[in-house]
Image (tube, rainbow, N blue to C red; front, side, top):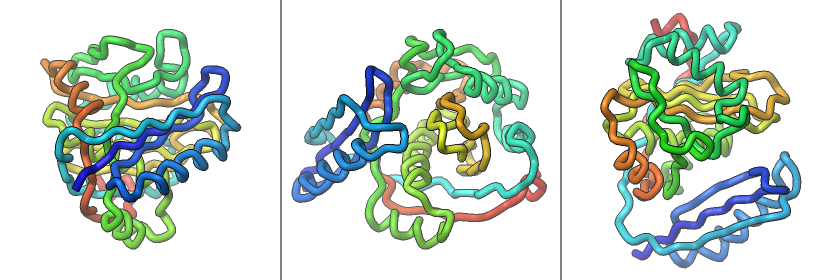
Length: 259
């Protein structure tokens, strides 16, 4: 069955507003293109003056993956304290992880704003290895199957959101690369304050109130093994098609249960 990548990006006066993508069979193209156009025109960040929708036939078969286990972290602790607990479960030194969390909140790009893609940080040195610190690395060519989405909705219940679905799909692709140890995400949407830390071998930890409401800063950081070659990593993240075809689990936990 022929599959197509459909990618949407929108902006206003050159500032990014929204983006989304799907991998679908040909008979779904019209429906999906219209859906993404509608989404671009009704974003909370405003109406765009530029919308791009790109449709492209896949040249290779996707990799089919099982989603990372999801842990919804429920706590009254400040986000930084939650992240300290979660980084202690990973191979990322806690202080290094917290350093980049703070950078996301204050503007991680050289211009002091939001990078268009993710920063890539070598562990344990903390050296940044992305070649363009404004653009970073952008994850593309990914989707979740309808069956996996239905199961995620069932497991998450009231915790399900479109943001969760899309972020879990992206992070599952990212963590599947053998060099990636963890991924930290803080949304740059001022109205969305839920973020996550995904940890190799543990799962996707959903963190509420990871940043103050109204803050238009954030971004992603990929923590990778020492000696990672950036070009093969970039090629996988930006070009290799991936479909999440099954889900693992959804649990509600406290930080105390994780240590």
